[in-house]
Image (tube, rainbow, N blue to C red):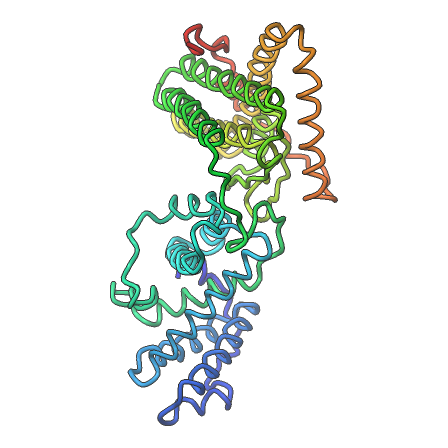
Length: 447
């Protein structure tokens, strides 16, 4: 089971299960007895996982697999597991988790097979609601990790996995570990309405037109970032990246002015979005995300143990942050791969310290460059709007709204210091990679 099975053996091997459970296997069992046995076994499995008892977990999984394999108990056993995973997922939504969050955490703590299980669980759970009552972002997150066509309604996802070739022991073991993770989730901030409570969009022509404009801008940004990611010349990559930042900054300012001049507030005000920050080198990656966040008038709280940063800001700015951060990671990773490994004078490896320092310097210099690009767009907007008499108070008010939203979701936060760079070559290489060219948008960018 990959990462999920890295547990210490305790030497307390179990030869029998609870007497109340044993009764279900000594002859024909009713559905009620089978369900009761499964719930008892799940309790034992959770206890084994909590105590890193691999032998105990294997025994429970084998017993549950036997129930699933037996024709007389299969239906009740499968439905019990289906109900348990669905209920656990519903609870996860209620304590603030979203599909992308669960998918990321399962991959981080368990592995790819368990990620497939949690995708099936989420698809089944979200399929119970009217689509109009589920936040569109949730459905988009699910589509990003599961582009398969829906299976037949007559077959559960558990039965479909078994029919695809997964044996009962492996399948039950995966379900148990996913259930255990869901049962131990911490409470997060509610960034959007939970499924079943989202309100349908306004559906007004004005809103539809704004969405179409936003998508056109994002398409142009994606095009610039794709060019930055694909070129092998760092000067070109820096120019394309700066152009994307300028375009996004200009779009953010235009959206703010349009909102004010129409005498209306943004549809939703500041929102929150969780963006993954993965190992290795999660510290410098968090610094890079913070640099992008700051340049785009947002705020960020890093949840290191959960592997993400929660970014708070207006919708257009959140889109800019997510797109640019992802692209910069691709560019930095490509440059690091080309740089190869490093060793000390005595033959020891210093690749890790080199890469850590590279990413820290890259984040530091990229932050400076992004702020320069944003400042240029603001200066141009000030000049076009009577010296900024309209724009300055507007941006200040939006910044205050973002701060208020951050304070509401995170009333207690503390600053975290990331380890300083220790490799001089890595630091200078990172600065050079981020500072290779004079940053600035092409004159044709806004055409």
